[in-house]
Image (cartoon, rainbow, N blue to C red; front, side):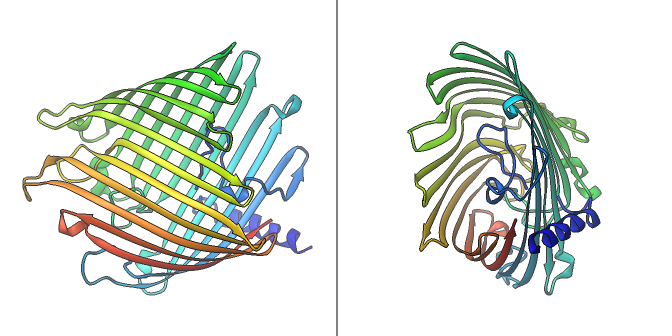
Length: 404
């Protein structure tokens, strides 16, 4: 009875907040979407469809809300995180799959109410098996002001949309895939108009079945970067990568790609990028109680900093999830980023570089199979040679998560 009442509350909440509350987590093959905590939880079946939902209430203490180098301002934040995921398998043996995701964060500040935020993401995924291969279609729309993974130290409202499609043809041990993706970034405030851009990426990938569950791949990408109000920043890139995908060691699944990128911009005298690129996502199940997640990234990313068209982003992260005493999970994590900017700035006469470290420790307790408590601590530090971007931040949080 309680689960039915809770589900009705979740659905009503989403309807009342439509357009305000939309997080995706891509699964390694790019086929299934949905937060990890919902991936294996079924709550309601409507025919073949499976409906999954969660609602988390998190209370945070942030020692440096504005991420400033000096005189940090601290405060409490209440964050509400609703999530809804619909899986709809279709066809013989459920060979086709449609997924819809609705996920969000509503942050309510204790003192600095102008910093209240609503980060919203909605996703669609369609995966279809064809007689000669497969077809995949995805779209992720994000309405956010989140600073994580960006150069922003303040909240900047923006909309991001990624559409992607891929068609694959299989023959014997080979498969060939053609893909296209379109990324759009728009800002709410007019002062950021010159930063708005679109990126179109055309890709072709050849796979070879090395082992029963492991594929080798050779990938070529061509990208076009189009700034709507700044033609000098229009650019293109060519990229070639080799890699592996699938079951890598027996207990490890993932995808790893290494290669070379040649990136050019229209404006004369500005550096483009020519060098190594890499991407990896690896999950190792040491046992049913121990899981490790590793991510690697090296790529050129579009920059908002002064006269730099891009910065070189080098990132590595590791997270370990250890279950003990049947109901507890201990989760230590570590992430390090090294961001390198290619241009000397006329103001400071130096090339900016940032080293950003984030370490965390969380403990989860399963009160019931549908009710979880979590206590977490996160330490963040940015060491930058530009003083304005230095900061230290401590974040302590306690939350309840309901999954049914």
